[in-house]
Length: 329
Image (cartoon, rainbow, N blue to C red; front, top):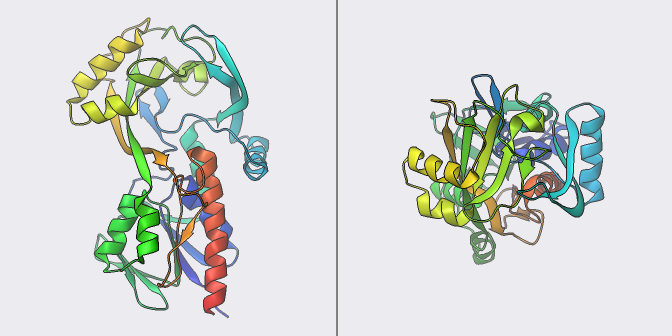
């Protein structure tokens, strides 16, 4: 008997975890519109600097994710960073949760997870077309992929657009569940410095009052050869200045940061994360869409936010899709 063909949309933590959960039983293809894997497990090089500019660390609150983390630690992909929350003066709020980071970078974790998978990067999907017992995944370049099941891990508004573009009519219950999910935006500033940032060890400050939600020195963090900072704006600031010029955003955030050293000319960059973090989360780890060929929605907006939530959602989506495929045989 041939193995079912499955397409996973999105090569972030949820998509990669789902693909691993499916790969022993199915022929799996992961597609993502970005040039590389990782989603918000994102790292950028600016000259000699390396900057994590999406997810900054990982914590664990469940035994399932703790097991994943320990495997990554054992293979040298992940290492511990610090425990608790660090205030602007270096004061510690001992919340008890150890923060883990990628040994090389956060994106390197995603790259390691993708090594054994078929991943098609720079491959945007334009529509999902339900053909009763299977799906046609219509790609932006005009090609098509056939699939007996799909896991969609894109942000929910993008997932809904793909279904709408394919003429898929969702049940009122599924529409209500999906449209109840909400996200907050985040403007992320990256900059290389001409000297020490002045941030306290371990190179992170969380939270900061005012316009800054998070600030990290990637050299102190252990991933950059030279001083380089990542600054995440608050959701309120991000909404207010979303369409502002990059220089205006940078000037405001750098003034609020009060770093000890200046930015090296031509090294400042802004990343706009429209769906940075879910503010309203679906109560379950994934959602199987009713009345169509097997399709499961997943991501960090299902069951729990952050990297842990995304990983657990992907794992749950794989099991849900396998059950759906088995039921359709």
